[in-house]
Amino acid sequence: MQISDAHEMVKLEKDPNAAFALIIDGKTLTYALEDDLKNKFLSLAVNCASVICCRVSPKQKALVVTRLVKEGTGKTTLAIGDGANDVGMIQEADIGVGISGVEGMQAVMASDFSISQFRFLERLLVVHGHWCYKRIAQMICYFFYKNIAFGLTIFYFEAYTGFSGQSVYDDWYMLLFNVILTSLPVISLGVFEQDVSSEVCLQFPALYQQGPRNLFFDWYRIFGWMGNGLYSSIVIYFLSILIFYNQAFRANGQTADMAAVGTSMFTCIVWTVNLQIVLTMSHFTWIQHLFVWGSIATWYLFLIAYGMCSPVISGNAYRILSEALGPAPIYWAATLLATLSCNLPYLVYIAFQRALNPLDHHVIQEIKYYRKDVEDQHMWKRERSKARQRTKIGFTARVDAKIRQLKRKLQKKVSSLSIQTQP
Image 1 (cartoon, rainbow, N blue to C red):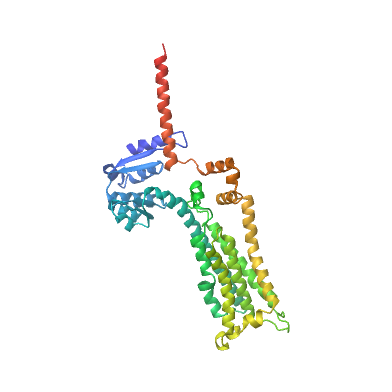
Image 2: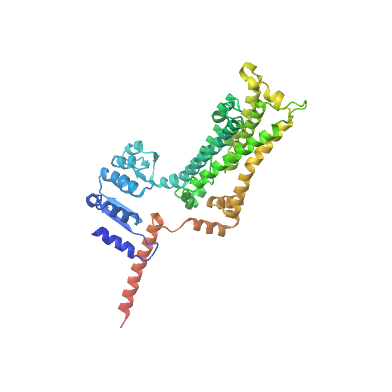
C-alpha cells in the first residue's frame, strides 16, 4: 500500500526536476524484496534521487545490488564499501570499489578498485572512468581496422590467383605484423591516451556521460572502423597491383616479382595503420612517438637483416630492400601514394566533424588549445555551466530538493506573518 501511494506521489509531481528520496529499513526491505513486490519497489526506487537502506544485512545488500538493480534494470552497477559486511555486495556488483580504513582490508581484497577515502570516488569515475572507456573503445575499434586492412589483402590475392593457396606475403611478414610491427602503438593508445586533462574532466563532468551513452563503441562507430579497414585494404591492394603489374620498377627494365609486390604492399600497410593511430590519438608522449615511429623503423631494419640472411632462410626476399626495392623510386612513390590515399578520407572526416558537428571534448580541446579559458573567462564559465546539467539523481537533485524545502518553509513563514499582521 505504501509503495502504491509513493508511486502516486511521484506521478502527481508537476515539477519535471523534482527529486524524491526513499528510506527503508532492513525489516521492511525483507518484505519489499518478495516476488510480488520487488518489481513495484524497483520501479519506485529508480524514480527517486536517493535510496537509503538502513540496518540491512550483508545478504540484503547483495540482493539489492544484483537481483533488484542489476537484473531488474539491466544497468551497470557499482558498489562501494569499507567493511567485511560489504564484501557480498561488492562481489555481486559489476564494479566493486573498496575503501581501506579502520574496518580492515576485507572490502579492499574483494574489490576491483581500491581507494583510501570516499571523496576519491569522484576522480575514479569522472577522470579515470572517462579515460579508460575511450582508451578501450578506441583500442578495440583500431584492432578491427588494422586486421581487416591487413587480412583482406591476402583474400584479394587468393581470389586473384584462383585460390591457389599461395600467399602474397612472406611467412615472417605475417608473423611479425601483430607481434612486433603494430602491437606497441596500440598498447600505447590503450595506456596513455587522454582526450582532455584530469583537471578538465573534473571541471566538465558532462564528459563522463560519453561512457554511459556509449558514444565511442556503438555499432555505428564499429562498422565505421570496419569500413575504413575495408577501404584501406582495397586501396593498398589494387594500387600496388596497378603500379607494379607489367611495369619496370628498376633502371634495367626488370619487372617486379611476387616477393617485390608483396613487400611493397606490406610496407604500405605498415605505414597506413601506424599513421592511422597517430591521427586517432589526442595526447602524445615520447613513449608513443617511440612506439609508432619505432615500429615503422623496425620494419625496415627487419627487411635489411632478413635480406642479408642466406637465400635458404630468406628465400625470395634475399636482399629485397638493399638491391631490389630500395633503389627503385616507384617503391617509395607507391608507399607514399597508398598511405596518403588511405588516411586522407579519415583526416577529412574528423576535420568536418570538428567544424560542423563537434562533440563535447572537441569543443573543450579547442578552448584549451587557443587558450580561450584564459582570454575569455565569461565564455569559459558559460561552457562550464552547460556541463553541469540538472538531473533527478545525485548531488544536483539533492541540492534542488533542499532548495525547494527551504522555499516552502520561507513561504509558510511569510504567510504566517501576513496573517498575524492582519487587524
